[in-house]
Length: 121
Image (cartoon, rainbow, N blue to C red):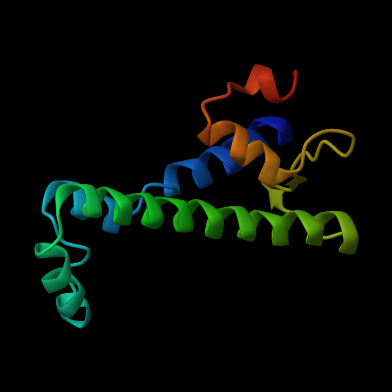
């Protein structure tokens, strides 16, 4: 895999991590978690209207995206400010130093932008 191909793979794996189990469980089962520690939250959710559950789903989705975005901000800052590298098969991952940051690419990808819209090969 080329450094640029790995770069795309790296970002796309963050995109794949975006949907959370909590969001899926809210949609499919009307609960937040199957863990006993969150049983009290599930009891509250059972009493909510469909519109209230949709609001909770939106909050959960937004917080998940924000957390992944913030992780990419940290990684990007480490690469750019501290000369850290992510190495795959002995080659440093491609970084477009004059283009978008890792977190901007993530935002573009979750918005549905193709890689051609983000950078050219």
